[in-house]
Structures are given as C-alpha cells and as structure tokens.
Amino acid sequence: MRPLKLALLFAAKWMGGFEVARRLTRRHLKILCYHGFAVGDEAVFRPKLFITREVFERRMAFLRRQGVRVLPLDQAVNEMYEGRLPDNSVSITIDDGFHSVAGVAAPVLSRHGFPSTVYVTSYYVKHAVPVFRLVVQYMFWKTGCRRISFVGCDWHPDGEIDLSNSSSRERLAEQCIRHGEALEDEDQRMRLCKQLGQLLDVPFQGIVEQRILHLMTPEELRGLRAHAMDVQLHTHRHRFPLDSEAGARQEIEDNRRSLAEWLPSAQFVHFCYPSGIWDSRQWQCLDAMGVKSATTCVPGLNSAATPRHALHRFLDGDDIHPLEFEAAVSGFSDLIMRRM
Ligand SMILES: [Zn+2]
Image 1 (tube, helix red, strand yellow):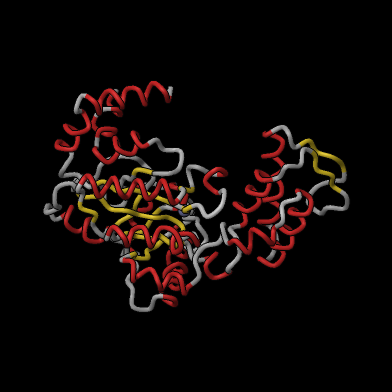
Image 2: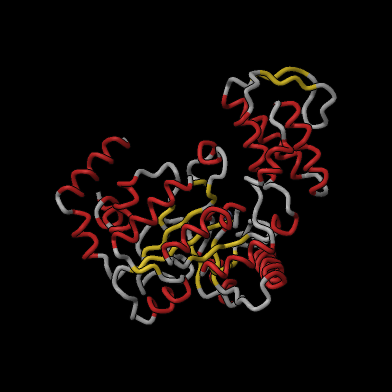
C-alpha cells in the first residue's frame, strides 16, 4: 500500500499537484507535531515517536525553502479565529518535553528562526527519572537475549520464556509495566528497571546516563525561551480521563502548578491531549480552566471553522517519507488523499 501511495505522491508532485494544493490551502493553518529527537537509537526503536537530527534538519530546511511563515501557536490561533492569518502559515508543536528537545531541536529551530510550542507533561520533569513505560519497552526491544530465566522474581513465576517471539515479548513487557505501575514510588520502579536490565542484559544505568528517555530538567525548560520555544500544557501525569471531570481538572491544575513553579512568568493556556485521546464532552472543562486551544493527533488543515479544542496536526517522525511530509505541508494530503 505504501509504495503505491508514494508513487501517487511522486506523480502528483511532478504534475504540479503540490503547488496547486499549496495555493488552494494557503489560508489554512498547518500544525506540525513532533515528540522526541534521537540522541542514540531511539528512532530505530520508535520511529513514530522519535526523529533523528538529520531528518529534522532536512524538514526545517524544506520549510525554509518553501517560504512558509512559521508562527508561534498563540499568535497563529488568535489570528486564525480573528480571520487575519497570513497566507502559508505553519506552527510547530513538540509533545511531552523529552530531554532531546533542548539538546537537539532547540538549536536547529533557532538557526532557522522558527518559534515553537512545547507541550510538557510535568510528572517526569519533577521526578527526573526515565519515562517508566517507555524504558521497559525499550529494554525489551534492545535486548539480544533470546530467552529470559526468572528465578525469585516478584512479577513473574520462576521459569524460562522465549523472547524470540515478538508477541510473547510484548506480553511480558506489558506484565512488567502493569506490575511497575502498581508500585508505590519511582524508587521502587527504578529498582525494577535495574533488575530488568540485568535479566535482559541491557544496562539500565547506561540509559539513565544517556538520558534518552528522560524529560527535560526545570533548568532546560527555562533555557527554551532563548530559542523562542513556548512551554504549554500536556497534563501532569500524561492522562486526561474521559470519565472523570474532577480527574481531568486535577491533571491540568497539577500541570499548571508545576510549570508555573519552574517558569513563573509564563502563561499556560494552550493544551495538547495526551496520547491524542479526546472527546468533545471535555471542551467545557477546558473552557472552564481557561484553555484557549487544544491540539489533537487528527491530521488535517485548520481554519476559523475548526473547533478550538480540536485542532488538527500532522504527526512527523522518522518513519515519514519526505514526499509524505511535503504533501502534508503543501496541503495536498488533506485536499486530495483524504477524499480518495
Ligand atoms: Zn504526549
């Protein structure tokens, strides 16, 4: 399916389709979404979640060549709803606040003079440990062991498990994550990760030292301002429950309180739904919390007719072909491909 899609995109670009789409969609706001930037092998591990420096550099250079206007999200959203958005506007957003945002993305964006918005989930900034779920999955991905032997392990009965089968490997990772999430604190979870590292022969300490699955420190968050990077809301614990308005409110309150502690003069009024899970019944809560916009992971163009709490974004990552990126930025993917 993908080779066919790429062949179609290649033909469309060659025939001037991207150029036509660019003209037809010039009044729409296009919002790009990134997550982590690879420092080691993260983009091989999760190519949807991480992007290498080289690919990101090429993407930003492409935007520059295209002459798009990269606007801060706050300005872009205001101007869009007031009907005065400049033609060919793009906003860049980055979710979660991985450590590599400061080290990799910030200098690249700065060099191009591109502003951006970083939605930060504050729990892991506060605790300064690797993101638990991700680090467990990473260790199961990274291991070269074909079998794992459990002896006296408190989350799995004694015995041997074959790791060469990807579904049994995933099941085991999920079992470990469930056990870890039920533990009381990060110290216990980190002890579990260390044990897992020994079982899988993947040194956990190396992952900690490299900080590949850490979020930024408060100091690094403060440094983003110098790169025209605006920090905004992404909940405290990366969850925004659909079934509990009180729980959802708490997540925004805790997120705001933590961010305000680290960035006292900033205003936190833009939001990104964690894991892209959202429902229009949550909009009232967002309004009541003074949230001006909320971005989803639903691809598409944005206009004054787009609900402000359901903004569309194009998710870029290492698995996205340059033609797919060009098609998204030109508006071609939304204009044509989604109608086919
Ligand atoms: Zn997220």
